[in-house]
Length: 240
Image (cartoon, rainbow, N blue to C red):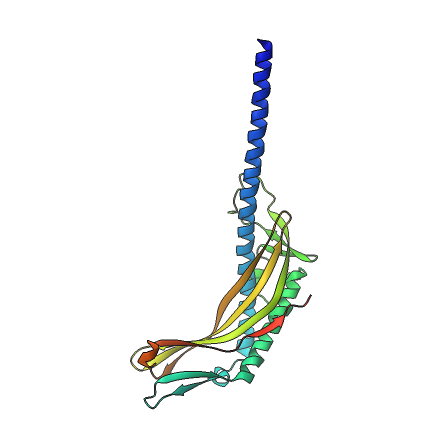
């Protein structure tokens, strides 16, 4: 009788241990996925704001949209083509791309205070450490309140390949005899995030409006009331 009880007790203990291990592994896997997702969201948001600040600074100081493109019209004063001035476009994109590359390099090195970004973002969730950043989890991160997870995680952020930039214009009919013109800088960069237990890669690809204006003239019917023109893409390898 005692041997049966002992056997039952041992089986129960083993079963509980197995269940505990499975639950811990499941929680670890789920938590890791949530951490990866959260880190991508927050770093992408931070980098997008950094790029937005750079684009704004360059466009405010250097951009003259009357120089970077010209509008061609037909005999009916309808807007047919938007032509880019290659030299002017390349000058603007070169400065934007170079500044992005410089700031991303500083971010890799953990030099948060030197970044070309507003002070509001410098201390928000990210703090510079040697060759990386200390990422502070928000209160809403999965499980950090319930399971008392460490709320600060060291990250190494690196950028892969090239920074790609281009200028795009979008134009559509606006009112009776006017058109709405939007000038956009397109930026693409690939990042790698290395965390203590996992790493991930993602592409940050965003459009940054730099000018909005209303111009006279309509768009021909064969464009269905709107069209888009794109400059050639400027690229700069990320230095290591």
